[in-house]
Length: 319
Image 1 (cartoon, helix red, strand yellow):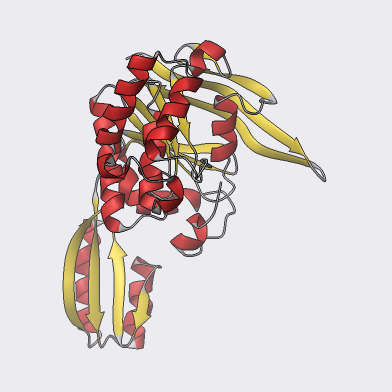
Image 2: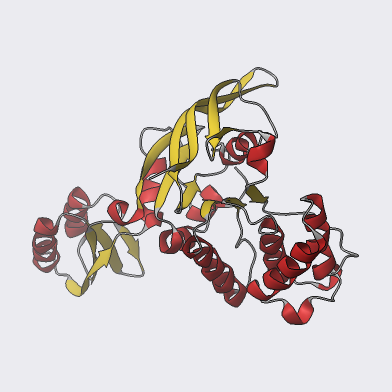
């Protein structure tokens, strides 16, 4: 499979009140025609990596190629598009005028540009809003017109940074489906996102960064393989709680109920026996498929020194 992005030993250091390593010896490959998820908590180095790929900042060491050409190469940029999380558009322009403007930047011939604007407005579902000024657009509409402008040059590679951030549920699903349709058209999508449920649904492979280092990568289907069992009980004595903690340290107690998770199926019956032996009643035993969110939290907490808080605390800001 041809490679869309090749990253070799990419490192970026900033010197502000001492040396800060934002990206540390990153090695990564993204294949053509896939949706690749680029994940990590706040400050992991994702945005810094994207800026180096686009040639907006230069690496301290290492290299990267996009579509076989060095990062920052002019010919490469004609085949790549980028949608930042919070793009700035001239809000006095209409949706159609904005796309026409970007078409002119790419020096598209008049006839081609006109046809492209018409097709993209249709593609992102803004046909009835083409003549509205952007200041009248909702957040979801701005995200859709942003994706449309990213497609003006008919790129082979699209880099999206939080494309579904802040959208209502309907717009969220529409943007997610649109991203899948781009892959179906043969595009490569490099997707940086904190919306792990979206990533799990649409991405073929993912990479997880922490403190600038690559800590896990692989196919989504392989990463989430396996199940764990959720066990809920009530009325368990204190001695029973102590025994259960030996098998499941992440046990949670609330309002007289005990909830614990066990990945080793051989221990599930043992847990049930402990509950019954210590005056408890088993409320439910439910096998659960592992989620990408579980993989993310487990990975970020392994050997990094990062304190695990709530998932929102981990992913609530920029990286």
